[in-house]
Image 1: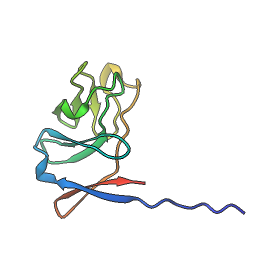
Image 2 (image 1 turned 120 degrees about the horizontal axis):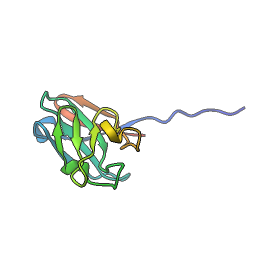
Image 3 (image 1 turned 120 degrees about the vertical axis):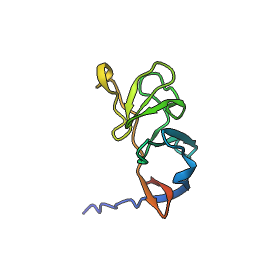
Image 4 (image 1 turned 135 degrees about the vertical axis):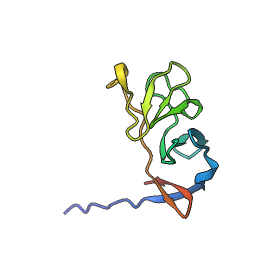
Length: 112
């Protein structure tokens, strides 16, 4: 009989929500690679692997507009909720999302 062991998510505190400016981003180094944490104009917070699916551009250096970020290298718009490119580039790759939660004004990133 095979036992399936469910891995537990470990939550890492990476700073206060207010450390990320509205319509801005911060790069967070992790053992599994850099993560870009974004805060939209309406205050929502998202996290993606800090690499555009097109050419690996640093999304944390892009311009946040609505609930998307424009890659600074070739201007691909990436949906912050899904990591998927928008518009004509839809379906051409993905920047993996990173589990995130907010507790007491702090940003916690999830690692399995």
